[in-house]
Image (cartoon, rainbow, N blue to C red):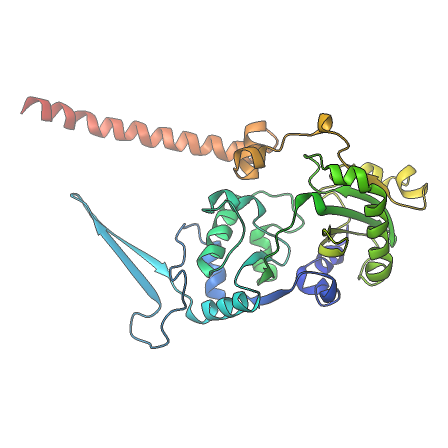
Length: 340
């Protein structure tokens, strides 16, 4: 895979080309102070949830200080404010109907919805967006995406806000293009069985082929790529996303060996190979959906990511050492208090 293939799949490159065939979106550059905040290891979420900061200025207009105290100590927490950026984000959110799906040029916080109050990626304020991205940043130190969150922020610092749309998972499909030929289509949510796909597989496949030949083929910057579509209840097809043609992109019900070997899938039929879950018997479990936890935690529990396991063991060791030190410090105090 070439670097250009990844670059061409960033949202700000392909969105102007296919604007009328996809969901309405707004692209905003990320200011340096926002970038620093997103990359910081802290967990503070920006304040000012529903309204932009006041337009008047004073000596402490850039921060909001929260204080609380107990019997032992007083703590001060400073939540950063970004007045100008907040105003632009709220303006974009309003222009998109009041609810948006946030992402960066390559990455989206899809497995961070477990932290949201409604278990959804729907956002209507800057704090909603920051909450998802802060969790996404902290849980994606080691990723297998084309460009991970942190690299995306540094290389091409842009926030993408997409008009919120209720997409039924059974209407999403991933399409694989090699040498400008549509060779394969996979059900996106392959962990579930959808009766309508089984009943309408021929119509669905034909609708996707028509959409590709009329709007996508020869219009993208590469001849090898992967694109995601959504077919709504009226049969209309919408472009959702574009990804590089290679192992950094999930091949779903296919294998990359099948897609790249030049075998049956790439050479045989005039129409693309179409794979989907054909019965409830073949339904596969989805750990992320079942437990609503980040994919990193799932990888950790199944041993699929050695780096996460190493980090986890180091963390556990550090916590154990701190616990032992606290126990040693507390023992004389408890002994002394029992003698008084």
